[in-house]
Length: 173
Image 1: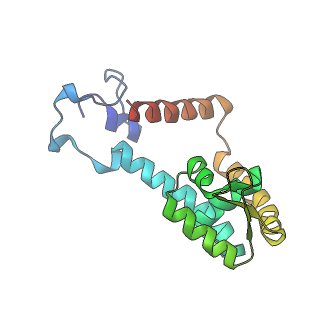
Image 2 (image 1 turned 45 degrees about the horizontal axis):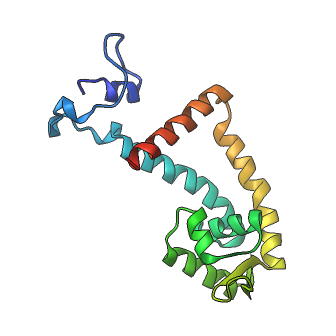
C-alpha cells in the first residue's frame, strides 16, 4: 500500500514510508488489497483467538457458550437487572441474550423476579448455583487474561486501548 499500512502491520515498514491507515483520497484499488493486513480481518482473527482461549475455560468446565458467559459475567458483577440492560451492557443482540437467559434458567444458573419498579420487565440474577459457577470461572479467565498480556507493558496496553477507542469513535461519525 502506498501509505505503508501493510508494511507497518507486517513489521516491514521502511523509514521513508508514512505511518497510518490509507484514507479514501489515496484512490486505493483492488490490487492494493491484502486480506492478511486488512484491519477488520486482523481484528476478527484477534477476536476469534481471544474468545477461543476464554471459551476453552467456561465451555470445558461448565458447558457455557460465549453468550451465556457474557450474560453471567454481567449479572455476576452487577446483580439484578432486566434483559434489556444486559443487551445494553454487552455486544449481544436481544435474541442472543434471550437464548442465553432461557438456557441458563433451564440449567438453574439464573433466576427471575418481577421488576417492582416498572411492573413490566423481569429482573434476572444468578442463582446460588450460577454464583458458584461464576466464582469458579472468574479467577480462571483473569489468569488467562494475564497470560495474554504477559510481556506487554502498561504503556503499550494504554496505546492499544486508545486505538480501540479511536476506531470505535470513528465508527460513530
